[in-house]
Length: 437
Ligand code: COA
Image (cartoon, rainbow, N blue to C red; front, side, top):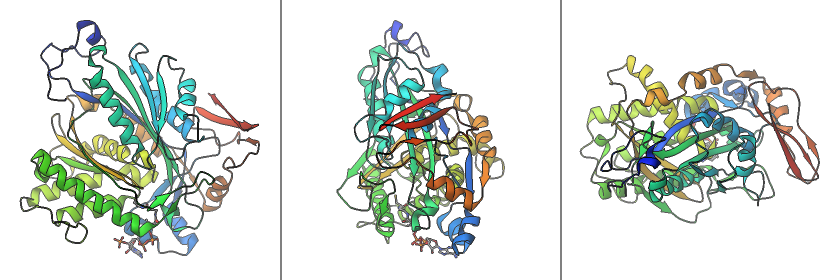
């Protein structure tokens, strides 16, 4: 579809970049923004408190800090917060879908997108839904959005995709170091200003039991080691198939972004594929053409893509896109101190999405002209730098004060509201009530 020449009528194209009748349709991320709580935990302090060598967390797992949500924040308020900066770019007449990808939804039936739609005062003439497949949900939503925009190109629609999650494993559990909270919002349309999503993906699904969360509890269950192995296996398989299907290899990519449950995870998969998947894949990959410069470029850009996640933690569905943001927004500064030339329009970025259970997908995006002007880099840096440091005791108290997973009335705290614009105020008679600042 992406290579097809599609005619866009003059009226439909009126609200976006002018498109001639013969220009191939490009579809992708027009704007992208993220939100994370205003509070964070230092993981070296957590390690010391738990009697663990801090190097295990900072080097072995690759996490330095973790955002901690106060009890007035859930995935609805984080989703609204992430999408708020995109409102000036949303045209009510063109917005046709609002899709929230999440695995920490607040209701087993009602879509969280409906609460978000209300908080953001979006048009009611929109399809508001939630999609779920563990950490893959954000990619499922993005793919649906791109397909919708391609299928209805003559109407020049917009789709708002939000990947929002709070990763909770429990206090003093092995997964505690890989918790986090946040949301990434993406406005999808034709003629995107940030990243064109290419129609080249390879996706694999298989029923496996590596990570899950039964509906009666708010903390996830994981077979940590098994899940790590499956992630690597899925990457090697979809990467091999992708390369064969699209006749390409590592040298075609300016950078690769991965789903990041913790920053060491993607690196394990990337190195496994680079080292011909010797220990992880059932078949060996053909990487004989991997030059030293490609290897160094991809490892360096991988590092840049992990900088935000290292500070925010795991945000499940949004993690891959937080990695993309980190790469796009920080690459220029990283390149100043290296031999690399900064990313530019036309560069190809590979993205690997993995959701336990499991679905793995590899696809590519092409950087749009002037992409830096369409980013919110300064705002994101300020958001991270202005967060408030919590002691381990304060983190534990905040963690345990969360809205109960039980039919009990709940009132959220009126303190710790700085840095947030949307709030879960209370749950009364099993109904959630939200407000905006
Ligand atoms: N200094 C440096 N590195 C250290 C260390 C130290 N003192 N102590 C341990 N490490 C390293 C280990 O060698 C290991 O590295 P490796 O994976 O490269 O071999 C790493 O730190 C983790 O140690 P490990 O003993 O495997 O940790 P764990 O048993 O506590 O499990 C997770 C870690 C991430 C698997 C666990 O947190 C988890 O279950 N997470 C949830 C599931 C998940 O995120 N799955 C990912 C796929 S989506």
